[in-house]
Length: 150
Figure 1 (cartoon, one colour):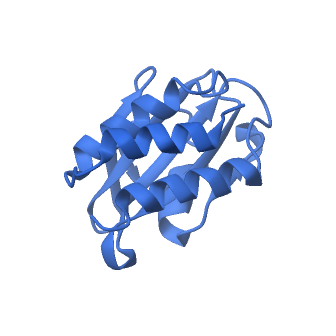
Figure 2: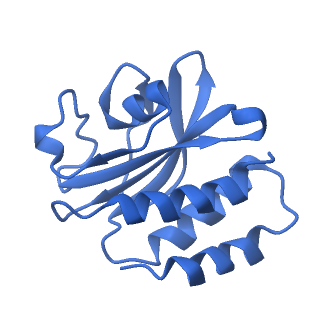
């Protein structure tokens, strides 16, 4: 389990003064991925067109390149603007299997300045039921701090 206070402090120090979203995404993905052994794949999908996500910086095996808002867990987070906690990906209607090892996932919308959706943060685990509301709250706070003014 992550020590989110320590993680947030590290990310804050690394990102201080940076405004480039891709640089910030790369740094956050790396720090998150290496902070918790539950995290099998950690990365961002960026909003690149109306209702379309494309892969951004990530850690882990290959991810899906393009995800429409209408498909999968990432699409649901982008479409609704709500965190998606999926204890069993096999039970999620329309789940996109980018990796056969994924058992559960959490996806958070990422908002920039003015509550503009700039992407989603996707964290996959090879363990079932790996994420909870505590993860969602802590990760959302980190994303707000890093991206809220970009």
